[in-house]
Image 1 (cartoon, rainbow over the protein chains, first blue to last red):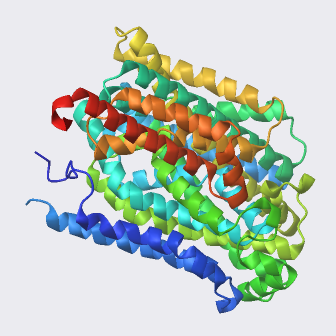
Image 2 (cartoon, chains in turn orange, yellow):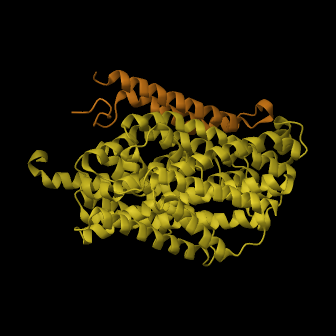
Image 3 (tube, rainbow over the protein chains, first blue to last red):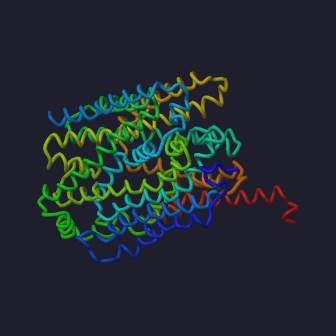
Length: 74
Length: 482
């Protein structure tokens, strides 16, 4: 049996799906973001997009952490 | 003179602090205490070590160089850590658990144990040691670059020998825990320093604000703001960014030292929380990109046009000597601290996966001794390689990266698909290496499209493993398919 603290021994679960979000944003979004001509503070849009992507990644991982915690047997 | 003095003070003070911290922690008595901190690292220490291994000279100097020479392709840096963390959230607790349950310490331990194959363990150990020695060599060469640009003439052989000695000192006695201390010092210094430089650099190069800096850069080099950047021939387009980002993310925790680091955590929870917070550290790459852009605006000319030296040259040109010294010292730590963890990993792998299979009777003390001796020998080897004929650092680095990345199917499938035979992994490795190293239609296609060749070879490797696994399963259970 799993210790309460350890991950389930199985492979991927549906609750891991948000881990794909950083890939959709930071990789999937590149062709679009690279073409945006808008320059907030004169900065290239792609740079700001990827910066935002870092924060999105942190939030997505934090979400899965909460889902995992909720799914763990008490 | 002032620059040299400050550089030496930064490096020596960190070294003394590390050794003192190591003594406080009491000398490591078992190989587990030494190599993986007795599986007891908490979130903060782990976070610093993880960040410390990502924040190397070539992250900092390489990225600023990319921003300067190419522009937009430097945004790769902002994807690498966060994507690796998204995978790491899932992967690292599983690696950790395997170590806890089965007493594993190295990546080769993992392969040998999980696939019940001694030859696979030894093969993985040798591949790992080779790649890590190259990585140490890169760090030593980078340190030589730092000293040359910030301090002027330094004898390369002396610099390489001192670098190797300093790396050893960081981990020789107390092992991983003392490296964590040094990584913390180095990470905090580096973030403060690049932050300070980024906030002042616009004025130093004659722009009125950071926005003005970007405006000037785009006026000077309009192509830099979007992919593929200023140098069309470099092939750093959209496909390149997308595939390389995935490749780096998949490979990060496959590196033997990152893999081994997972075993050092005190709990699975530590690794999961680390995955949440690790990406935020990479926001500081914005400062580094900004400094590369500033170097472009300032018209900085690095020695021999070497992009890796542009940040060092910018600081040397535009800032007072004490700042140059501080930056030089911190940049030296950027090479030394990750290098020390690499050496520690080499020592552990060599003892546990090369010596121990041959002489299983070795006791704890003898193992520790063997690890330390191996570490010294491989440090000497790396130092010797670094003063040898000069090859392009980036080329060597990418080769090492792709070499190690080939082990990925064996790690991921261990948790996704039970019962894959070792021979299927071996065949996958062979196919992957052939695809990567031999000229073929695949490598020509990759070069033409910008598709990361390492990722393409890895996909072929993975497909080979799965096909062979499926075929062998059919062979084993003929009744089920008849």
